[in-house]
Figure 1 (cartoon, helix red, strand yellow):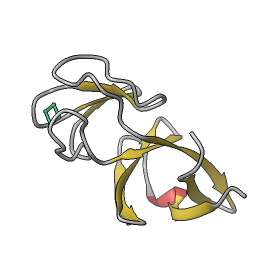
Figure 2: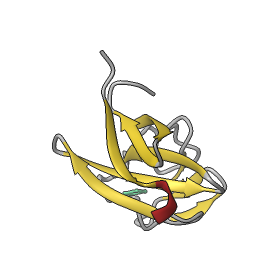
Figure 3: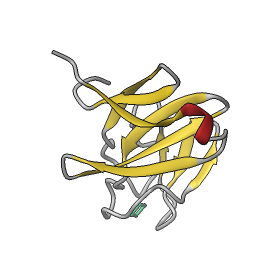
Figure 4: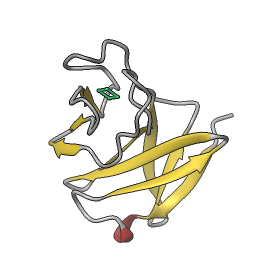
Length: 105
Ligand code: FES
């Protein structure tokens, strides 16, 4: 059974902003990109630094440590020095809340 977890009221996360949280020992960051919500593990696959404060460009996040780029939709690395994907999670809005699902992409 898929389990959806409340993260934050959708109105509380404006476009361009992010929200970090920890669920089941996973550091997670949720971004609002022009009204769409994307959730990824807040852990760069290059050197395990947090991604939350990286520069957003559309659905691409730049790791603040060494500049690797990742696609928030797929978790795929888009530039060195990262070559492995990051974990990404399904999101939805339910009753005004952003929810994520750790079992789904
Ligand atoms: S830790 Fe992210 S690019 Fe190095």
